[in-house]
Image (tube, rainbow, N blue to C red; front, side, top):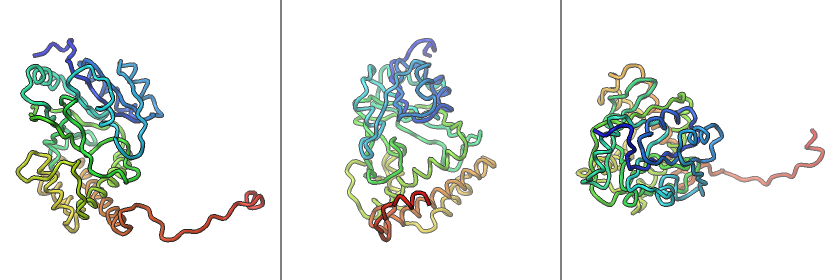
Length: 313
């Protein structure tokens, strides 16, 4: 076991924007890292102040509206002093047991990267069922060998400047760590809904690209017999064609995958996922209705200049 007072030769990358509620717990959990970068998007709260108080290096990211997004930009441009990078979102925590395992894994690595399993908490409850656990994410890897895929969603407005559902394409073998990372957002349901409203823009474009057969060589391909991500991609290509997806998603989560065992939090989570799927479907309809564009007006009018008299009416 690694002594907890020693630093582990890993550079932590934390993407952030207005995260003052989540950030203290996140930063407290990564203190064993040799280096911590917080890449901020012009936060308006105390995010930068909190990060600096924990000794993190703060870098500002200015999104150009297309590509690259925050994590890929960081992997390309930050001067990491360690070979290994660990990507941690502000609402995630790295446990002491996981740090010990990371320290051992990178000493004599058999892999170029490792999947970490997330334990998702919602309304204070571990969502252990409904297909939410295990939840494997490739977060620890040799930073020169990994970049996030491009799913061809650059045209979509209001999706944010950070990779969320994209996955890392890694040059090398991938292993799995045993201990969980913790995912728990300390913000309220309003922020969950607001965030997933943005995510549904992104998801609708992914669905649209699948339906229209857009060739996307920058993305991980679907394969029923591949790894966990490739299997998900294969199933998504089938999923987009199903009718009544919001209803099916709730039935899958709550009944078939036993989400009801997580109590009231599980029921609320399942209903929100169903609502999220409905939003994706409506936005997909909008994309198909207007030839791949969102918010296209059906007619235009010429603006009338405001006269001095009108301005005071």
